[in-house]
Length: 93
View 1 (cartoon, rainbow, N blue to C red):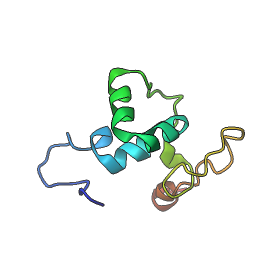
View 2: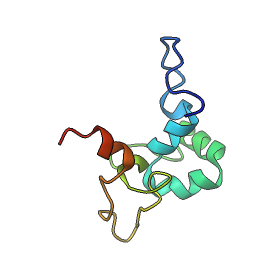
View 3: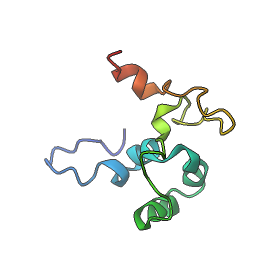
């Protein structure tokens, strides 16, 4: 992953929505198309509150697809849910 997730600085300011790859993983799945069209504008909208990131706005990494969330179906949100690449590799269940 470029840039690296851990840069050795001890600071975490470059993680989360500040990291270009992690931001896509954390993007609310219903806003993924907006994020794909213009990632910079989507991040600005997240930071100013136009795109709300709440407990109900589930992140894209929960769904399968390459990139994460690509297999999301708005008509059947449970299809492919919890089948994301990251979840399958780190889940203990």
